[in-house]
Image (cartoon, rainbow, N blue to C red; front, side, top):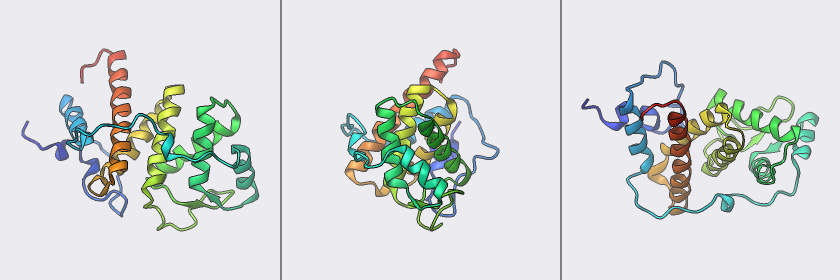
Length: 207
């Protein structure tokens, strides 16, 4: 097969944070060639040393997840950055609260529906305050990191599925990555590869 990696795995081609968002409808599959292309694209042709953790992306939250759940019910505006900080640290402490489960499912579903992460959401219906405010890469790195830990702790495939799609969106922005963003991306890409390879091994599939 003489197809380029971008033809075999087209989900990172172009700017996927503009109107050219991925839909994943009628996804073509080329067997092992698809996985080979995916690995090649994720590598960013880099040999840089990778970071050793994701903590630098996050701040210790001032508010608990219960606080954000209350904000949602009251119809108040929710800042995504602060919400993701709270989710991340709840995962770090292995919090088993209903609030953590609720917000993980809420954030996962929201991304699956629109393939965007907005800076602020309204309460109650959790709608974007500004539909054009969805290009803050830090939020995509944060949600990808949150889903990485969520999948490590639960092995629930919806978290991995959404994580891979966020990585596609980030990958499409890689030409403009800062050095730190590139290092974070490569760290996450390595996690992603290990997750997929572990599933393949479990089912005796060679990729």
